[in-house]
Each structure stands twice: as C-alpha cells, then as structure tokens.
Amino acid sequence: MKRLAQALLLAAAFALGGCASVPADGVAPTAAAPVAAANPVDPWENWNRKVFAFNDAVDEAVLKPVAEGYRKVVPQLVRTGIGNVFGNIGDVWSAANHLLQGKLFSGLDMGMRVLTNTFFGLGGLLDPATEMGLTRRSEDFGQTLGRWGAPPGPYIVLPFLGPSNVRDTGGFIVDRASWSASQWATDDAVSYSITALQLVDTRANLLATTRLVGEVALDRYSFIRDGYLARRLDQVYDGAPPLEVFEDEADPAPPKK
Image (tube, rainbow, N blue to C red; front, side, top):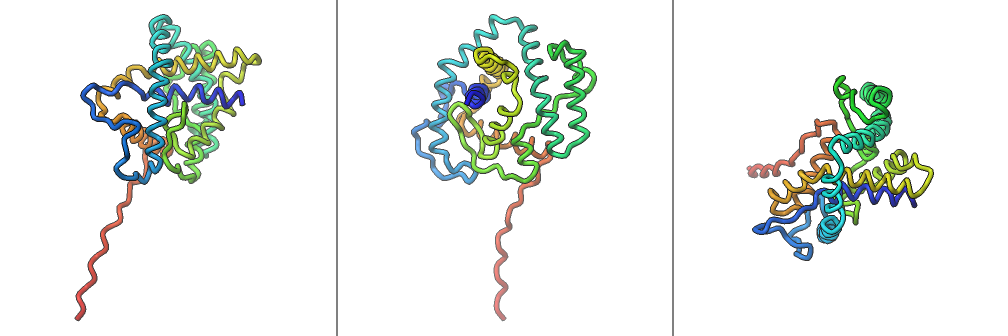
C-alpha cells in the first residue's frame, strides 16, 4: 500500500502538470457539459472530463502553488542536481526495460549512462554522460507491454494519476513497485519525503509547459488527451509508429448485363 500511495503522489505531478487556467475568452466545455459523440479512443469521456476537472482543482489549490514556491526559494543549481539524481535512478529502470524489450545495445548504452553519472557525476548530481553522447532514452513498463503487442485500451483519466490508458496504468504500478528512489529509505517518513520532493520538482519543471497549454488550447482536455496518446504511440514504436490504415469505400457493384 505504501508503494501504491507513493505512485499516486508522484503521478500527480504528471497528471496535474497539464492543468492550467482556461483563457478568459476560451470556449472549452465544462466538466458537466455533455459530450456530443463518443470518441472510439475515449469512450469514457464524460467521466474523464469530471476527473480532469477535479485534478485541475487540486493542482490549482495545492500542487502548483507549492511548485512555484519551490522554484522561487531553491536555487537553480540545487534544483538541477536534484533532478539529475532522480533521473539517474530512473535510468536504471529504463535500462532494464530496454533489455526486457530485446533492445540489447540501447540497454547497454543506458547502463553505461548510469555507471558514468554514478561514478563520475558524484552519485548522479552531475550529468557528464550527456556530454559524452550517452543521451537519456527513457523507457517504462507500459512501453515494454506495448512493445510485445499489448493494446493500449481505452483512454482514461484517473484521480491524481491523470492521463493514462488501461495498459499504461498497469505498467505504471509495476514501475513504481519495481524501482523508485523512495524505496531506498528504510523510514516511512523519509520515504514519503523523497516522493514529495520528486513530485514537487517534477511539477516545477512543468510550470512553463502548462502555462503554454493554457494559452494555446481552447479545450485543454482534448489537447492533453490527444498529445498524450500521440506521445505514447511514438514512445512505444521508438519514433516510428505504423501508418494509420483507412478502409476504402466499397467499390460499387458492376452493372448487370
């Protein structure tokens, strides 16, 4: 249960990261507005919009103000170091997922990245691996499932977990249960503190992005949904998703002689 609670907390950074105020002249539908037609990739849109509005309210009331305060108080150099450490820990699980997907060479590259940053980057505070050309290629268990043919299932917005689908929700739970920074702490209070710091740091890094989404998107729900689905498809297929096939209209029957 502790790991699941940590997963919920951390996921809020990503789920709520897409939440920002709708422009005053925006025409985005409200959570209570009826959906005109069922979207085949989002059959639960009525429910999803209500959960999206709930997540939005929580973000505006709690997470966003804390992230803004963190950004103002903590120096950039310290925030960069914190992000590097969390990134280095995540790279270990990314390397494992590369190998689980059968991508041996990229898995070895990620392993070398972890070793480089751990031993030459002061435990991950610095990122010399990127300067050496060992760029981060993050992979998670949802991508691994997709790699081996698991369909994504319907799009869903979960309370606190935010944008997801059936496959990625299961994959996320495995990710958090298998490898996370908070698991290294033996004391519950320290473990939750690490998770909270990771959440706030992630949300702080998304402040500019969410501000832009609020400025350009008339319907933030659809904007974030479509962006999430496109991004996940691109990630599963390593930037080369299959082309969508459209069925041609049936040719008219030839006239009878």
